[in-house]
View 1 (cartoon, one colour):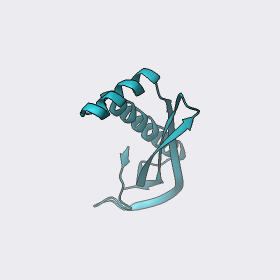
View 2 (cartoon, helix red, strand yellow):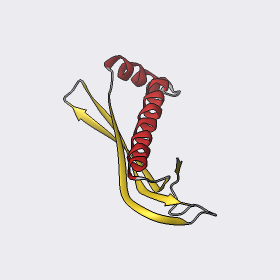
View 3 (cartoon, rainbow, N blue to C red):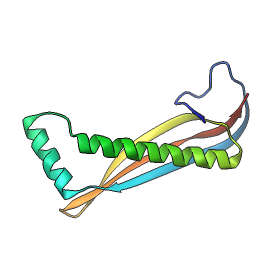
Length: 108
């Protein structure tokens, strides 16, 4: 399924709008991953575990959004927006939420 952040698809005509579709992924953070990410922050470098979690969450949110669009009869999603949010739960951890939204459309 075509998905784009732009409001249109170049060379394609939008024939029908189905409305806003969304997808969400919420992942728990891991205390050991947090600990090692903190060390990386001190000594420099990339936090590979967090990057992998973000990538997986983004892919899940986009797949859910596309599945919702497909169920409505759409063959594309335009105006896609991806948001990331960290939700703290007490002192020991939290959750990572990734949400994707866009407009489901049928294009020719």
